[in-house]
Amino acid sequence: MSNLYERYREEAKKRCRLRDMGITIGDYQTGPSNSITDVQGVRVGHSTLIEGSGRRKPGNGPVRTGVTVILPNDDIYNKKVPSGGYILSGAGEVAGFTQLVEWGLLETPVGLTNTLSVGRVSDSVIKWMAQKYPEIRDQQEVIIPVVGECDDSFLNDAVGLHVKPQHVFSALENAKDGVVEEGSVGAGTGMICCDFKAGIGTSSRVIRLGEQSYTIGVLVLSNFGVMEHLRMDGYPVGGVFARVQGGYSRRAFNYGSIIAVVATDLPISAAQINRLCRRAALGIGRVGSFGAHMSGEIIIGFSTGNVLPRLPPKPQIEFTMILDMFLDPAYRAVIEATEEAILNSLTMSVDMEGAGGNRVPAINLQLLKGLFEHYNSVKALMWAK
Image 1 (cartoon, rainbow, N blue to C red):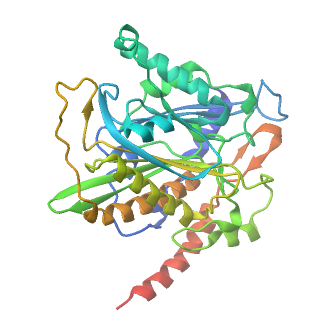
Image 2 (tube, one colour):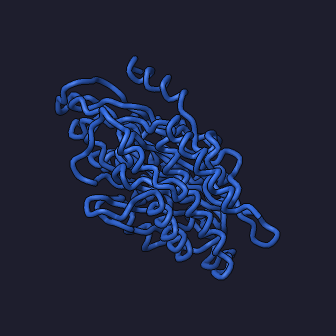
Image 3 (cartoon, rainbow, N blue to C red):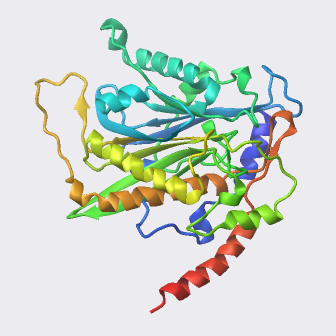
């Protein structure tokens, strides 16, 4: 790995998550690691590419990009899971989305990367799965990997196509549960949100329905919005930062996008997952997105609460499902988790200079903490009995 990569990783150790600053979103409790991996069986892997600096040299850098993968379980090819999605604004792409929604099933890992590397990541996931599951070759199976993208070309030499198969294989092989690395890592390496450095963020919520507890986790690749629109827990902090933040480069248009991946162990149908994904879009809006013309807001969702075997022994299987009328807590929880995941992508990112000398600042944590010390005191007064 390059010295530049190591320098960025050292800087990232100085950053912290939203809750580490005493800032909480919503009412529900988080899971143990406050991440998508709190949904049992879900694993996340990254490959991060950081090389070169200075003038943009198409095909030769600077490189600020990567790959992130989410594995729903330990054998997704043979243990398919119900899935769904929602498109708030379609100025983006998720390969495999058509089949995902049509069948309501997910049978591959979910990949995230930059816009111009979707095809390469899709190809590499196919190769990885064909090696892992030889029956794909033997039985002439056809799989369509699910791969989402955001545009990192403001900081990255995107047309250089620097993501290679080995980076995808590494992310897949090294995927793990527990704490998820956030900020300027994996697919999030070159991403920007509300004119601040952003990228990968995650959060989770635990809800209780009857005698059973369930987990909802969200992972985002955040790359949308302008500073003035940024809100945190309803507080319009972006206007404050816009007045004091200097020495940075802004994108000319409000383009970029966000891909959100929702995972849950709630036993719900594909149609219900679609509804859950639509509520995640409300969480994106709470941070400051209005679904701009050049910004794609796309949500993918899956449930591990039911598993469908690749080769069922009979036409019928047992399928457990939560009734619609009891899903309101899940809708509230996914909104909270989506908002916090985006904000974690901001607070965990570092200042970054990339292609063409463009410099994108990390959000100032000291200023943010100071703003919320005042805001929290106001909230305390509002809710005091």
